[in-house]
Each structure stands twice: as C-alpha cells, then as structure tokens.
Amino acid sequence: MRTTMNKDEVKTKLKGFFESNLGVDGSMLNDDTELFGEEIGLDSVDSLEIISFVDDEFGVSMAGAARENFLTIESISSFIVENA
Image 1 (cartoon, one colour):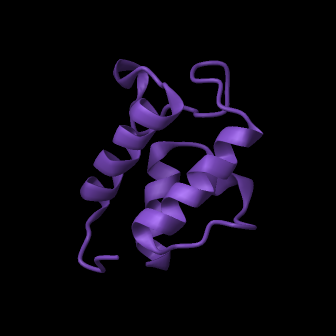
Image 2 (tube, one colour):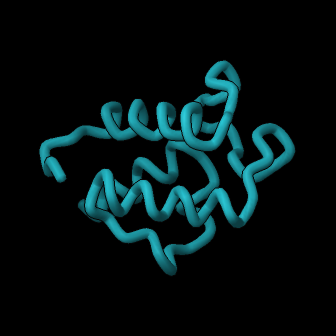
Image 3 (cartoon, one colour):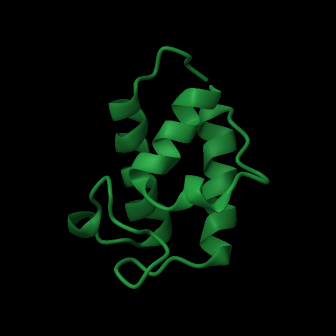
C-alpha cells in the first residue's frame, strides 16, 4: 500500500477494476454514478469483490463499512483515502 496515493489515483484504479473485473462500461462510470442503482446495477456479490479488491490493492478494510461508503466511485475513494 502506498500511503501517498491521492484520491485521483484511487479513482483511476477503482474505475479500472470496475471495467475489467465487474464488466462495467467505462463510459458510464462517473465519480458520482450510483453503482448499485439502476444505472450500473451492481449487486451484493459485486460488493464482496469490491471489498476484496480494496483490501488487496489499498490495504484498507471495507468489511462492515456503512452502505453509504459503497454508493459511488467518489464515496469509495473517500473511504479509502480517509482510512489508508
């Protein structure tokens, strides 16, 4: 884990993960796009993959994190930066 990682770097890595691992169309991924709503449509299995990725990639545990931390790329990256 690099503690000097900034929020933009985190967002870039998250977007790459969503595209390559979860099959999300990158053109639909904005910082404030709802990931679990009708736009992207991720589900609880996807949330487990996100938790695993964040732990492995950034060394930040999202297990047990409040739902609002998972809503958007912005909220996930904020959680990572604040808890790194």
